[in-house]
Length: 252
Length: 252
Image (cartoon, rainbow over all chains, first blue to last red):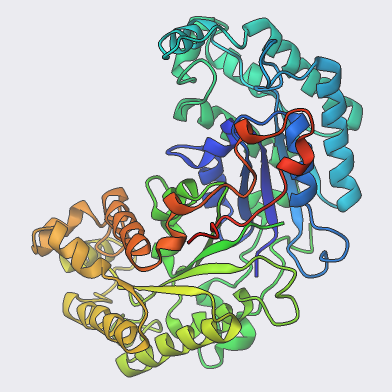
């Protein structure tokens, strides 16, 4: 029923990826008729809470022959784990690294052919974030800061390196796009934390580029339609020509 | 693995529904963490070619217990069937009606609990369409016209009525939005046939309204997250509190 799948697994920044200009919607558009792109964003979740969800999102051994394959899992956490104490979202840095390793292990145990990309959290604009939190009723104290989130972004890169999994370094990509000035992040972030369309555009471009270089067989430009283009249908006897086929072409 | 599903089954106007402002992306956003919204748009296809595809998109009896349920199937054809001869897309009006009936029957045979909505094709702006076709190399003759597409839209409404299935009358909604003036359709159509964001906005609003009135249990506002909101997680022992649950709430 389902086509093979790209699953976007993360927090609110992933969940919001189907809003206007969001990276999930753009990816779904690029992969239409090739892969289904599924939103597994969980607002507010850290890696600790997300791990038992992931177990339920992967096909179990019994069902595997009946369900679609996850071709690519994009794992994007850190924005909540990096919350500072006493936030309930806080996950200590060594535990965060351990959880990323467990996520990679879990995915590869469920299906060794599933490709993985880790993504670093975006930089925090503490000026914007503080103003947003201060405007709430009651006002809230700063829950994230620039340097700590940067450390969590570094930890994602280190975990990816240790597991030999590609990484999309959103932290650095947005930081550079903003000219390495915290105030200039407001073009990419709505509230110092979540992404505006310009922020998602940076993510989308970086992700598509990483897929193309690291997993070229999954690049949307290298895939064929699962159901043939209309001009290739045998109009006199359509049924045989519209049989489902793999989007990944065998020559890859 | 998959959440339960809303499947959008149609032609290029459905396939394009994940572009900027598209109705598919907006629906996926509204249903995030509740249902997966799947793009089963097939550019250029008419009902004759799409029927054998649909058979492959519905869960078969053997796999049904392993895969997600299709909660809602949105069926949106007519724009290609209404092509005028000698176009290969042309499907005679009685055959078109017959195919719509076969689609409804096929879906209900696969799973009687799947809800269906039929959608009428948008009106054609022959001025825009002619200009678009004339500008191609080599120039093409007009392949659709206003009155014929209107008849196919009427046929969708009649088939829906005969099968007791709700219909979203996009033809009338866009026609009225344009003040019933063919030239004014250019606000909603890019080339006299395909939809601009303003056209998709009309479709989205009408579809969401029809779901709310005809299938209120599937209205996104009446659904709960499959994986609980973060604030309801038991932070001391997260696993039991994040067990997958039905998005449709039992009180509905």
